[in-house]
Amino acid sequence: MMTKKSEATLKFEGKEITLPVIIGTEGDKGLDISQMRKETGLVTIDPGFVNTASCFSQITYIDGEKGILRYRGIPINELVEKVAFVDVAYLLVHGTLPTEKERMDFSSLLNRNSLLHEDMRHFFDSFPQGAHPMHILSTMVNAMAAFYPSVDVSTTARDIERSCARVISIVRTIAAFAYKKSIGEPIVYPRHDLSYCANFLNMMFDSPVRPYHISPEAVRLLNVLFIVHADHEQNCSTTAVRAIGSAQVNLYATIAAGISALSGPLHGGANQAVIEQLRMIYNDGDIDKFIRKAKDKNDPFRLMGFGHRVYKAYDPRAEIVRNECEKYLTATGINDPLLDLARKIEDTVRKDSYFIDRHLYPNVDFYTGILYRAMGIPENMFTVMFALARLPGWVAHWREMISDSTKIVRPRQIYVGRTQQEVGNELDSRSPALLI
Ligand code: ACO
Image 1: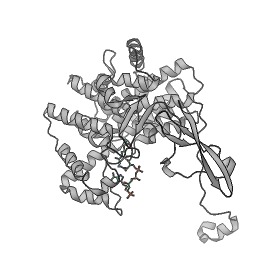
Image 2: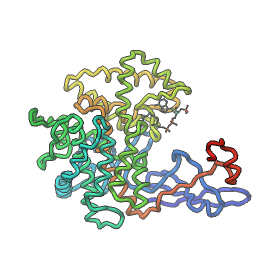
Image 3: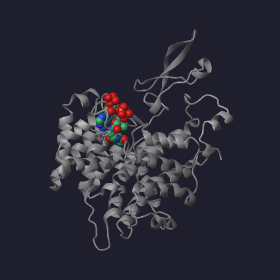
Image 4: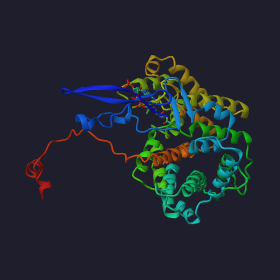
């Protein structure tokens, strides 16, 4: 696994200490600073954790410079071509692809745990019309702790297994129920005879007056989209899951934290933001104006769906989604002007030195929205789709975290506020009204 191969020397205020360098299985090198403060009084400063490895992990490997993404050692392209999302979920959570028997057992566990507690159905009535499904999702998942046995570090392996399957399976049911509620249609229950993705599509689109025909192509596509989103090592939401979970919070509250983090437009919320932005650019008609805005340091505008903290090459997921998008729209004869616009923007910025110098390529979110639109998924459900797909990743990281007996996540800071003040001085400096 990991090895301690060499050391680095740190000189500070006349003192010299050696720090171990840990080398990962793919050659990543990390300076182990855990003893540094004790020996020198120094902490490290790294806002946004841009250069901090927060844990050791065996789940996902990314080489951002080469555009490589592997789950448990298997390249993302192979997984997309050869297996279904449920296999990938098993792979992430258990470490290997399932045998036929393991697959059957896992699928049946997901099936048995797909029903939402009936009393929780009433919760949907309390959300205001127009509530964002991501907010509904995080609230509902948090509430699961009140309806299902609590799962934390002390739970037995069998119960952990069941609860992980429950959370992966039920979130899909909650998502579809939230959608049905938002359009005022009766909810559709999960069916035992349908595969994971087919079941979700059926819960979303079946209706008593308009039976849904489950298209094998839509099911295949959803499997691809879910697989490419299933994990991405220590991204913002996974870091939230690990951080919250490290306080030994129950699994549901932990996953709810991941969902909340994912909803932000700089993270999973970008897929919805991309479509909104593409529509705005389309309506305006002046692509160059928006590219200029994106490059202007005095303008907060950013080209959504571009750039990534880790990838400094083309995001391999974006490549897969772009190809699927082209294929699906051609096969279904859908003519989406936003796809033409997206291609045009990509072609333009990839020749632009601002984007070239900063290694800004399309990320996974740039083309997913167009594909979801073509599949009939409403825009406010785009980030929910991402959350469903990311469930196995969050669960895998939570399990890895609790089995590593990691310390509670608790970074340090450099205090830059006022030095000690006296109450009298403080009060004197306020306006007389505040003193009353
Ligand atoms: N448009 C214009 N300029 C950009 C963009 C963008 N989309 N992304 C980064 N830049 C510029 C920054 O202004 C910065 O320029 P500077 O060096 O001159 O100051 C440089 O590129 C580096 O950007 P940072 O913000 O430092 O990169 P960071 O790693 O912190 O942020 C992030 C990554 C949040 C993804 C960023 O690229 C971004 O905001 N992209 C748009 C939102 C988006 O698509 N998010 C989805 C990410 S993928 C996911 O979560 C699934």
